[in-house]
Length: 301
Image (cartoon, rainbow, N blue to C red; front, top):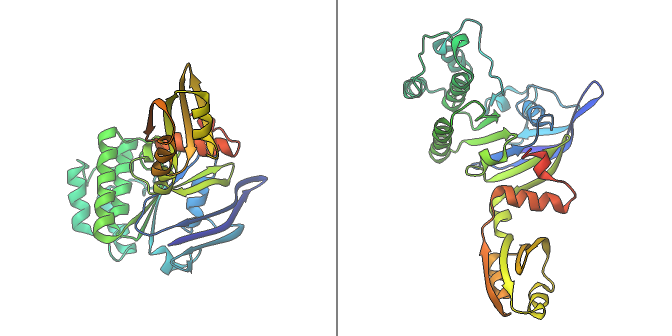
């Protein structure tokens, strides 16, 4: 488990990270969401031990990470723009990382290179952005660290390659318990892979929740009531996060389980009603609007 407590980092007069606290559980995909400048990359660099925090603590399996070799053996950090040695090729990087990480799997590495159509002898400097990102991910996966920290993992990858990487993540999680931590500015990229999502804004954590809990405890209902009295009876005591009306059609985003909401609407007369699933985007919009933020501007542009 990775425990981040009151993490703070300032560059000159700019507070990039402001008392961030999150818990990253094992064997689950943690998504760190935020716009450019929200502090995602800085948080990952402090979690990986690249940067020293000005305040707060980072513990990896109960070990402080900064300047701690044993803790860093459990981590592999992939930056938004991966670094490779000058004039190096994939073989060069494999030799380096297999010397750093004791459990680096060379056979698996070259198999992935072949599957991804990456030439092991070609100079990395001639690779496209997407190819460099693929190589960095392969190196990270084959290092067999417990935690894989990825900054903008899928940026520069085509849709087919993104799904391929997600499938590899799922395989590694199932076979050896790898825990990916993925930072992204794109909420939609992470919807089908994350178990827990933290939302960063202006250096602080705006929201951090398990997706399953969020999905189970917030519902969208579309309905047409028979009478105004039925509407009042159905909604009385219910926590309404958002409501819309188009003619006689009412749409409510409410807090509660699907069973609770269905039971409530079953007690009144309606022309029709249905409880609809919410996307991750809709859930975040609802949750953040409650606390006064417009995630559509923060994340979705």
